[in-house]
Image (cartoon, rainbow, N blue to C red):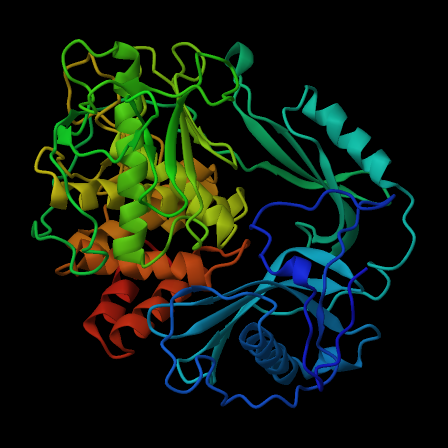
Length: 596
């Protein structure tokens, strides 16, 4: 059960909780009902902590990134956040058991602000998808709060339930109807149903990352009513690079009008070698590799974060193992090299560019902010027209030569790895409006990676299409793509305006709403459905900084389109000022796509 903490005293977080649990993951059962043990902060009594304490200390340089949850700085920030929630929601202080919160992460950003992300708890039980994020300015003063706290009926967390964790697992396994490649997890939670009512529930996760028999990889999240056994909701957190009902109309891959000048921020100290490695999609590049004891070289980069490594899945239906790729002279992709290594070169380059993009543009050290190792596998299955982030690593198919070639292009790599970024930060649930945003932000970040690489590598051609370099390689149409951010409707499936959301709620199709908002913010132009125009965009780098900050700092698992608009406006305000042209353009872009 969750520990109660008196906010009038310094909060103590157990040392084993110094690392935040990644978003969209669940704890393994620790008892008969599978409840995770988490420390929490009560919203029962106002904190006596002063809101003016500078978190960085006097004269101490602030280093952006995660803050140890066990540190005094993190505890202070958590207490200030909970105190603010109390002030905003005085009705909660009289509820038996009160409202409580489990700190998930505390992070500082490049502006010196501190952001406290906390899971809502009720009677010691996690409330699915409900988070609050407290934002403190560079001086340690409370700035704002993301998220609302609603009333939850007494007893949902502590009252006995008719079903056990084993019962709920059996219900989920029957629906899943297949084996798993990872151990199942079950956690007691409280879930808000589609009817707006809260229910005692079990969160069951069943994962099968195999693509055997042409099936899609799955990490199914089931929310089972703990008393009736009914499914409250369910969704798959593993995205796949495809969409239902695909039609290939050869929509325009709109070229960028953004000035081709290098990004203005980031790490300039990384040594640049000779661009003598040949990729399939990005011309000549300079890969970072590792020299082995036998004098050969492997696709393992130890210069970025905790590493980037690329392995061979050996055409298995579920990638595993550590079979690497080697080269005798560290010149990859030259004539005479094994053809099997060709896709590995692109995947490795894609991961490196994605890491650099996060670092230089978003100011982030890998997907978790702490340099998390990026692992890629190529040659998953045979003729697989798919690429996906499976919660731990990247898996790339080789394509079938008709629908696609190898799915290792820069924008696909950036798209899929960015599902990992979303998972580690906002945790956008992969259904409904939050699911459409989840897909959109991967399209946006994947497009950002392609743009970023194009500033450093003249062979990379940036445009506003998604997956165009790999898609339908033999039809002779270089503009054919999976999605089109400049005109989402060009694929015959996606929508570009919120007014049409009821007609298309599938997450790949609804991603066009935010995709087009991002395009209009960057380039300017008209939304096809509304006819509303955004005059003159603000350019790619500013747009990426705004949307990236919104995702990692101001969005929660259940953020909807309207809340996404507010998140990007807040991010633009932080970066450029509340009366800036950038803030106005963000508002104009969302208005054009029907989001108010």
